Length: 546
Image (cartoon, one colour):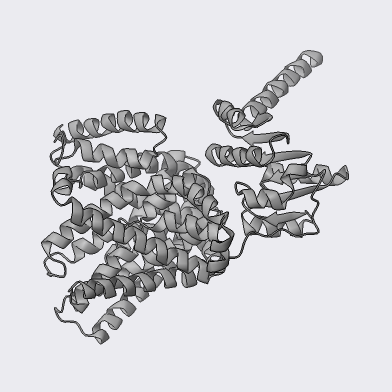
């Protein structure tokens, strides 16, 4: 009953705080972290024993990363190999080397300096993916780069943990580390190989029973069973769950598993962010404000610079680099795991560990706001010609052969965008489709559709495709916040061009109209209208048969 009381307090406070902050435009993740800080033992003390909340939070992070694995699949990872190997390798390597060098300059010995670099190199998979998914940006160029870097970071956590005793000087030669890593990799390969053969058969047998509850239990069994099996090899539960998600993603049951997983995942993952907030001690932050905030600024500025440099080395546009850097410049939840692994080894002294813990939590708190602010910063930087020339960044380009006057611009090559392009092509109307997902652009080219790669929320792209001289712009972007920013950019570039916007829900119509859309079509209203007409037709047909 005591635990139930704590849970009610946490959930009640979260509902109130997140609702109030949402009205102020602050993302929900930041609200959950603030909720934990308010009700936790270091503030109001409404929840004094955080251990039980942390258990549920651990379950939540396991489900969250299992869901991430479901969304990715091994084939998706193969498409992201460049972002994973090159982007992730550059970011992690440069961050560890830079942090270790700076820490050594401040007086840390080699082992602790390298370990500090490992902690700083890891970003928050949970916070970043939640934020990018909410904004519909996982398929955007900066979303793909961020995702690739996050995957590489998470995979690096295993050798980082195995290296802790060696860095602490407590025995273990380089040969022992290599042997341990090899053993772990063999165990991981064995578990995944067994799971890839057993899981599809298990889910197929369960699916034949046609009992949804049984299928949900089977999905949970795969998630926690694989995570537990891999944890026996020293791999974190969260990373084991991520690999389990990759296994299920390769089967035909991926979509059903995702739909069944979403409700419990969202609820329990929210408890993880609340548990992170409970680590915040406002009085300690105030007492050591200079050192904590100084460390936080060094981390954010340093990681931002390294990730931006990584994007530019990969010849990505300046805008993509800035958006990726603002998304990944924090430290993540796996850093807590690394800190726990180092307890009792004297790798980091108590003052540094405490300040680092506060800096990690504050950086995670700032991340949702950084993701929301990123497009404004990127848009401002992209409009500075000398900055692009100085950084040798590739500006977004558009084929000069495409129409640039009296044409229709289709912003977003989704299902509706495809239908619109086909209709325009049949009517011999000049058009151009614009999408920021390279795969969709290639798909359009294969289908004979005139399409270019670009972010239509960026003024330069709109200028390049002749937005001022267009007859009409059709916005096929289902995520309301993303569609709203695109409509505002189009209206700022071309005040008089008609804009037709397609969004998911009727309740979001006013947002798009206030942003400047001439007409708003909602999937919800259109679907309900079709269902009503179909019902009336079916009833009329029944009457006629009588």
